Image (tube, rainbow, N blue to C red; front, side, top):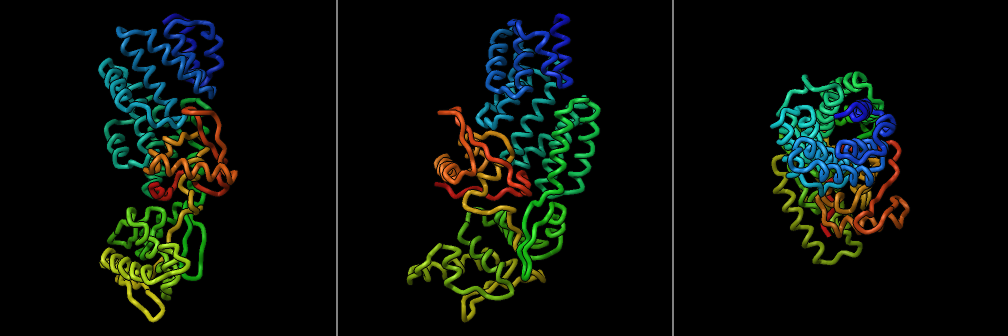
Length: 406
């Protein structure tokens, strides 16, 4: 690598893309193309960056496997930032293996962190934790240590472990400042703001208020019977029952929990569970069937008793019943929650992240566009949607469950 290329690489490593471009902007050799691609990515021109990196990978050829692998890793990072979740995980794994085999530990670690970030984005926490456990961050350079601690904090936040998240963010801030990269420092600071933003709402007898993540953690440890509308589960201190795939049962459980200790009329339950404004005998028969199923599901946690008016919930061990709801609710709250991170999302990436069908997501995007809540740009496969962050809404926390499949 000649002196200009080395100087450009050093400028990029310290977050100075303009300084790098001053040195190699007019060059078309493979190393310069790769560096130009990374510089354009840092400047936000992701389309141009992707094209330059692919051109560089072709120019390096099969004999320069390490350089090609570095281009693949850089392209994977661009795909992640642009929310292109269709990028080949196998290609990234192969590139990481090549870098490890040739002793490029730093870029191999970067490749692993990209995969961890992707796993976090689509909610695969167990897989992300397994990847994090595979290497020690201590020998990594400051920028990668910061990325590692951000990933640790991401897992801790989603696991509602506030103390661990604060520790990881403190380590990430120290490493980011040591790296001297302003963008990385800003990323850590923005992530830390999440801990001071409402993550959920508490609905309990006589009160409804927003909760910070630390308060959510305290509620989960309180021993109350919690109908968790963020995860679509019902839990107490000892038992958790998932109703993620049973939306009708969850709607009934939530209606009963919101009314506790009072009962809920059959007509109200019909509206909440089936949206039946004018119930007939078939609706009432179905309600009896679904209440029976709910009793079976919740038998370790609570009793569902018939009353003269309708039905009532009675916890078996807990002394209190509460509902934990997302900060923002509505028919398309899950889509808005992802779009509110400020990045551009494709409909296919949203479908992957939400675990919903492409048709369901597209219908949601069309409705939100008509309502003026999201804005599309681009055409065809390049079409993306963005939304402004919702004030006071922690977009990466306690996201609602997947949309109903269309």
